[in-house]
Length: 331
Ligand code: ADP
Ligand code: MG
View 1 (cartoon, rainbow, N blue to C red):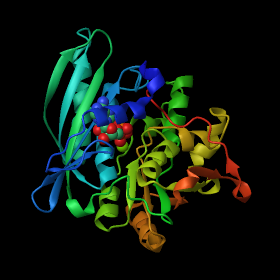
View 2 (cartoon, rainbow, N blue to C red):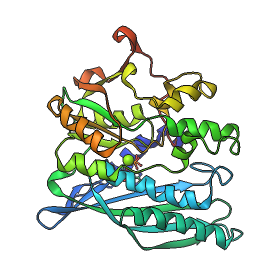
View 3 (tube, rainbow, N blue to C red):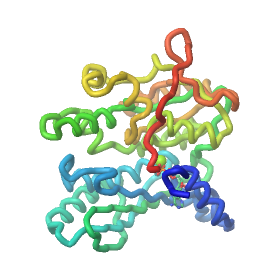
View 4 (cartoon, rainbow, N blue to C red):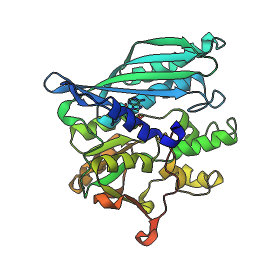
C-alpha cells in the first residue's frame, strides 16, 4: 500500500507497534510532543525532533536564512513548551546542495543561535550531508522537567475547559499572504508570525509547575487536528465554541481577503506554535492571572466531553458545524 493511502498518523501507529519495546527508564515513548526519559528520582529528560524541508515547510523566496534558522529551532522549542519543560541543548542534521552559498549556512546558524540564546540552549553537535536539490534541516532538542510536572496529551478529563494561547490562525493567514505576494505583504504581523513564531516556553513551564493543565499540546497541524490528538489519546470528546475563538484585530480585518471563511485558518491552519491545553474549571481565575502576568492572551474556547461525542464545533445557538478538512497531514 502507498503511504498516501495510509496517512501520516496511522503510519506513526504502525511504526510504533512494529517497534514496541519497553525500557525501565522510558516514561513516555512515541505519541506525545516529546519522549520522556527518567533522569534520577525526580527529574526527566525530554527529547523531541522536527524537520523543516524546502518546498514542503518553507520556500527560500518567502523567508531569509536567518529567519529560517530561528524557526527551525522554534518548532522544536514549542514541543518542549507543550510538555512544560525547559530546553537545554540541541543537535542539527543539515542536508544541503553543494551549490548553496556559505553565507546562507552562516545566516541559518546565526538565526538558530539567536533563538537558542533567548532560551539558554546550546548546540552540541549534528551531521552534514549533501542533497541533490532541497535544503532539509532536522533538529533534535533536549529539555528537562520535574517528573511530576510533565504535561501529557492523554490526561484530559471530562469537564475540563479547553484553552488556547495567543491568536490561532495568524500563521496560516501569513502563509496565504506570502503565496499571494511575498514582497508586498512582508511587513504584516501574520507574515511575521508565520516566519518567526514564538515558542511559549515560559507559559508552558508555568502551567506545568502550577499544575494548571491536565493535558497539553502545541498547535503545529491546526487547532482542531491537534485537539484531536488530545481527545483521542484521552478517550474523550470536545465542544468548541466558535464565538470564543480569539481572533486578532488585524486577522479580522484581513482574513476574508485571503480565505473564504473567517474561522478556517484559525481552526484548521497549522504552524501557530501556540499551546492548547485543558484545565479543571476551578483554575479559571489562576489562568486569567497567568495570562495578565505574562502578557499573552489565554482564551477558553470549549470543554472536554464524553468519549462518544468526538469534536463538535458549535456555532450560533450551539448548532454543530461541519468540520471539513482537518489541518495539515503529510500523507
Ligand atoms: P509533533 O507535531 O508534536 O512534532 P508528531 O505528530 O510529529 O508530533 O509526532 C507524534 C509522535 O510520533 C512523536 O512521539 C514522534 O516522536 C513520533 N514519530 C513521528 N514520526 C516518527 C517516525 N518516523 N518514527 C518514529 N516515531 C515517530
Ligand atoms: Mg507538538
